[in-house]
Amino acid sequence: MGLAFQATDGQSEGGLVSEARTGKRFPLELPIKIQGVDQGSVTGNMSAAGVYIRGNAALEIGSSVEFEIALPPELTGGNENVIVQCRGRVVRRDGGGDEVQGVACVIDTYDFVRQP
Image 1 (cartoon, rainbow, N blue to C red):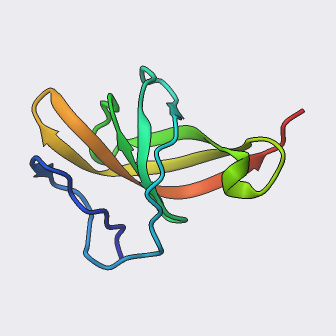
Image 2: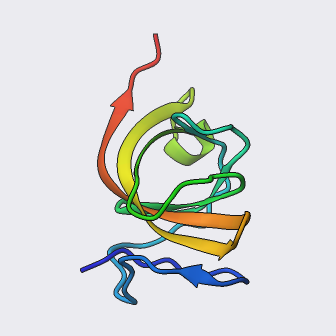
């Protein structure tokens, strides 16, 4: 069963996406640090199985991606940010040409990182 995210305005390019949901999606806009990519991207929504990234995420379908998201205390109930390091794959790109509006990524593995 594939990961599914609703498409935004624009065209969708390929991908291993189905309409079956793999978990509840949360509409969270959080900064996301993508390894090897210019920063400035944010999450559009997240689930335990995937994330939709909006912004300048110039990633190709099928490519591996490593990223880090800081979950703020108001989401976790803690006293400080919880850092989640993820590895996954790009399954869809929204937009056309050089104007990529976002990418959908499936999360293969994730780790919580303790703050020193």
